[in-house]
Structures are given as structure tokens and as C-alpha cells.
Image 1 (tube, rainbow, N blue to C red):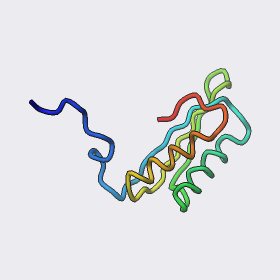
Image 2 (cartoon, rainbow, N blue to C red):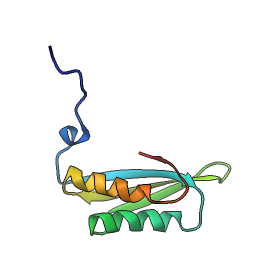
Image 3 (cartoon, helix red, strand yellow):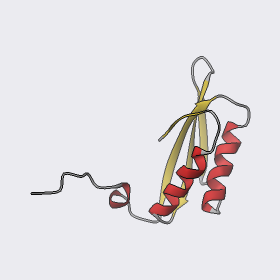
Image 4 (cartoon, rainbow, N blue to C red):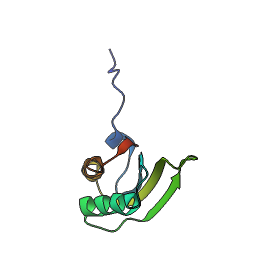
Length: 92
């Protein structure tokens, strides 16, 4: 019987690669810089690009951070760092 477990992210990616992390959190004046800093510290390198958009009512902000990752462990480390941000609603 074939294994019904879907492949993990590491099986779907080739490294090194540019990877985009997406953070959705309650709006704050420092969210964008804080999210970028968390990823930079986790990866020990600068990110490639940062973009953001506010929700229609301005309550939430979506931040997209693209960074060069060398391994799946770096992806996991960056997600772990982003979890430390306050007011997180969703990480993608």
C-alpha cells in the first residue's frame, strides 16, 4: 500500500531558493521592521524584498518577506523567529 502522507515542504523545494514568508498581524507602527529583523537575524543575512498591505479597515497588516534560504532548516528557523512577534494572526 502506498504511503498516503503528502510530501513535506523539503521534498517540494530545491535549495538554495528564494522563499516568501507572509505574516498577518494586528497593525502596529513597527510590524514591518520587526518582521524583517526577525527573519534577518534567523538567517544571518539580509532579506531580498519586503512588501506590505493594510486591510481595508486598517486593523490588520500583511507583510511579505522574501529571503534566500539555503535549507529547509533555515525556513523553519525563520518561521520560529516570526512566531515570537506579538499580535500575530497568521503565518503563511
